[in-house]
Length: 190
Image 1: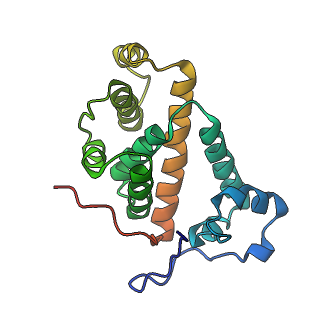
Image 2: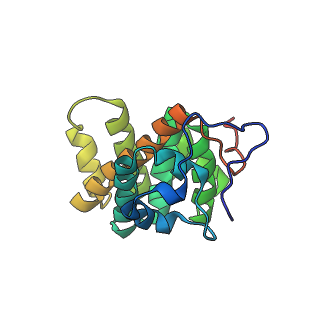
């Protein structure tokens, strides 16, 4: 599926779309994994207004793909954070990707609402994400102990923080840009 931001109800983004021909070679190389059928989503060309920021994001995403968390865990985290920030673009994209990763609509709804998924490890990751995202200061020791009892390693913990960081970057940048998703909106929560 090619990503296309030409939504008839939303025609203008707030950030300028940079032509690919103007991007630095390092940026073009970092963007290669993001191409769908040879094309880049418009949002990447808008985020390219700061090529160093875009590259940092893309390198972090590449690191996540090589990291210790499963794709379905990453998508659950991204879906939960996107719900917290109310990023319609990311909710749309990550609802689709979560479905591809095996998270059905019922499970996605539970994740977005902060309810138990019934999966110990996934619930531990989401509880940590919630605590880290919502509560300033040091992580609660009991919560950390519960996460370790659920089988989360130190690498999982660091990868979790990177996943939260990357999706928060896209969420708030999309809020500036007023990005329009090429995919259907995420289902409404009841």
